[in-house]
Amino acid sequence: MKRWQRKTVGESTGARKRCESWRVNLDDAKAHLREIISGLNPGEQLMIVQEGEPVATLTRARPNRWPCKAGSAKDTKHWMAPDFDAPLDDFREYAE
Image 1 (cartoon, helix red, strand yellow):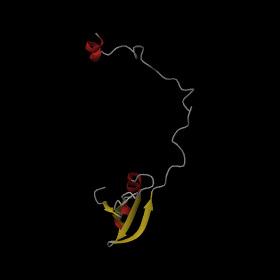
Image 2: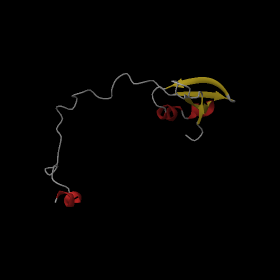
Image 3: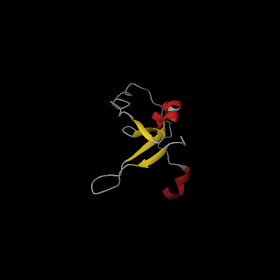
């Protein structure tokens, strides 16, 4: 969203890393909340301001689990082309 502003909250000093947060107007947040949340990375903060003063902070939650489990596709049939491991024509000159 074009109305978002990224503002530097802290500067890099020693072991501390630079910390940035997003700022958005309260009216824009109300109108586009779903889009704003989907644009945030997990753990990233968004400051909601009204008339230039902060009124709330929104933080996207970190996922509780991985999106898939190991071995979840073991019974799934997979298709592979019969010539999967055949040499590619583009590399024929290198193979000679």
